[in-house]
Image (cartoon, rainbow, N blue to C red):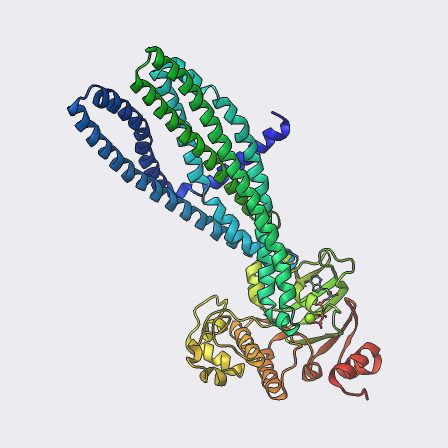
Length: 589
Ligand SMILES: Nc1ncnc2c1ncn2[C@@H]1O[C@H](COP(=O)(O)OP(=O)(O)OP(=O)(O)O)[C@@H](O)[C@H]1O
Ligand SMILES: [Mg+2]
């Protein structure tokens, strides 16, 4: 065996033992399943024995007592087999389902602790496919392995039996067995290779599906349904051809095994038949022998199909563990310092940050000081790095150079949860969960909020009035499967969420999407309430925000080019003048 093959086998064994680890908590089920199996296995050998008994005693000796025994024997045997096969299947499969459930939950849990950086360049559909499809494949790992082991024992047992029946006949019967080894290994490898390709293809389809369905508005708006369908068809074509190849390989391997079995049976028939004709062997002995032989090739075929399932399970395991292991390397890590003291100041010191795979830094040497109670407005043209700057505060991303300190301590030192609790983020795009209005407002609560607190927050966010008009008020379901809210209403719900959270430091990325004047005015009032007596960093798109800011930071190409009060900037900063004229439609004075 080459080194490569040895390491391949070691890799497979590692995957297997790791997967089996997830079955361990369900030992009870597995033991019951195995117990069932222990009874099922010898019934095969017993069947072979009964056949010999029937032929020799009943058909040839015409023994009527033997007939009764054989009849009852067959019925009892089949009942036992049925009952214990039920045990075996039911408990084994339950263990499998519970194990993959545990794997699935762990995978999702681990995905959520991957840093934003990872989600930034990974397709959601691919991740969904791993959780749904690849994990599903792993279910067959233990049942297949058990079947494999069981059938290997059956083969060994039956081999002994045929040797016991007739040495020379047995020799001809098992002569071809070693020949089965080569196709077994060959098809194992092939199934794994095809399995990998097929699962990648499933994932690609899932990516397209996720993209198409979440971008349905754009697809319809541009009337590109047909083009998208063509794209989808191309992807499913790859998938189906991969699946067909898999099926072909699986069929081929089964047929090859059967062929090897047929050759063995042929050899035995030829040799045994010759001896029956010569009179040195009874007909019953030959028939019994052929039955045993037939029974011997059944497990060989099952070993083959168990192996195919096992290879598929390992393909899934490979892809699932790939993500799980990634979390060991890159999961979000915070420090140990609990952020409990009141907010004093936030400082950026020559911070530089570039997204992965981008040449130009999005934040290019920014220094900034925000003191408690201040309202800092950040302005700059689109793409100047405002949102990126805000994303650095809750450590969605970490700067590559420079540092950010809070109360004099680098952000990295703080426990991530406590840091994120201390910073309230109202993002540019609102997101509501598929839950009630009240649950959405209280989302992420660290303690139980009373209904009164939730309503107070909603009132401060000017949301109370419209919430009361909803069919079930605060209990109305919103989000994907619930009542749909307008842009302004959604914004007010997220503002209520931030008010309830009551963070000492507020990061506000004002929505760029224009609301009509009336709801704009209400959202503005809600925001005023939110920012009241709080330190806030606001990415400003509203005139009122910049006019009331203690300091305005002007950004361009990831750099801070000037900062100061509105009146000052208007006189000395050209970029600011231009922005001011463009965004607020006011001529500089
Ligand atoms: N998730 C991302 N991955 C890679 N690059 C990004 C990502 N988000 C933004 N960028 C890049 O970083 C730069 C700054 O983007 P950013 O979103 O911070 O701009 P912005 O000032 O918030 O703009 P806007 O006013 O339009 O919201 C842009 O050049 C953009 O292409
Ligand atoms: Mg932005």
